[in-house]
Amino acid sequence: MRVIASSIRKGNVIEQDGKLYVVLTAENIHPGKGTPVSQIEMRRISDGVKISERYKTTDQVEKATIEDSNFTFLYEDADGFHFMNPESFDQVQVPKEVVGNAAPYLAENMSVKLSMHDTTPVAIQLPQRATLEVVDTEPVTKGQTASSSYKPAMLSNGVRTAVPPHIGVGTRIVVMTEDGSYVERAKD
Image (cartoon, rainbow, N blue to C red):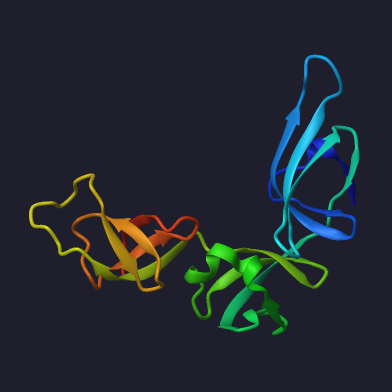
């Protein structure tokens, strides 16, 4: 589907020279004199190479058709991550490059949203929050119940985060999957 360059936004997938690119930033620049342009920074999905392109705002760009579907995470092996479509039971293998920083938060039977171009997975979207256990942190300090200072902690998935002083080893906490930041103590 061809669209004008000024309508491209972050997260869109563009097809250029037979390759797929995911848009990282898209900025429309309107100089006082001259033609307005769209500065688009994108990453090639196949190998992760970052490129920057400048188009006239009226130039036509090929926007790839992406289909979002729900999948269930099954397991990880040397080939990548394996997911199953809960409706058709089709299995899909997703390369480590596509999963990227989301890998530590994937848990067995977790429901995720995969963005597919034809049959190729191009992006993954995890649930916003994950519940994990604190496996290592400094001991609980008496008297510090709700101060604004945080202490470092290691979670059961190997990610380091900062937690309030009242959180101890073995406590289950809720973290944001986007950046691993502490949200609250788990209610289970």
